[in-house]
Image (tube, rainbow, N blue to C red; front, side):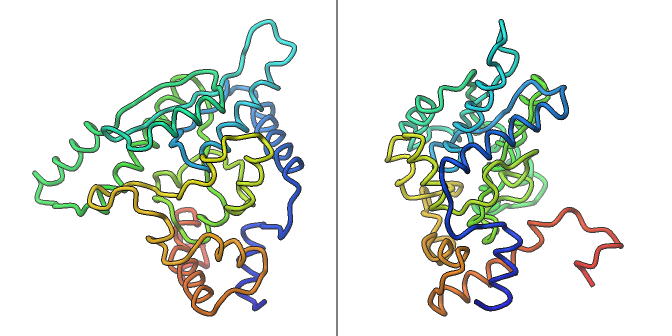
Length: 275
């Protein structure tokens, strides 16, 4: 293992082997501790896409809320799951299955199509013709904007689904799905997330489906691994300190270096990052 691989693993806190039960408890306790420490939040908000990561974080959040409400006459704390389709979602059945598995306290649906299209049209009217890729980022940011509005209304915390494989590759939208208050599965890679879902008796098809951000109109349901140019298995192996092919290693490290700005807070003159 070379120095850069060691640095990345240390930064993202990935362990080569995990105990799923231990990590489930660790995430639940983390969620509960955050609420109990600050004392003025009523629960959590998260958009549910029907994919692996939001299904896992949603289930952990609901389990945390259930424990926080134990012994109370009334349920003080809540987990709000939000469906955020752009028009008609092609994998809507997976969203339904994820919600059935999670059993959230409350569910809202906000269709972002009108808001995203209005934004794109306003830019076009001003002479800014955005690409389909940029419009995809508009979708991600509109989804997060809606979650923060719900969180503000109900005094909740916005959860993020950031995990190590996506963090390494920068495969998230800055100020979109990359924006959140807390990230309960930070430290886990993609296969470790699957291990937790399996332990939680999640329907298998929700964590074995081909991962896709599905943000581009011109390339619907584009698999993440096609967009990244490397497989999650290779990224996970790298994060666990295993040897991967030179081709995979070079691609993974190029993605990491290129996306460093996404993992950094806004830079000021005292930061060493830019020097």
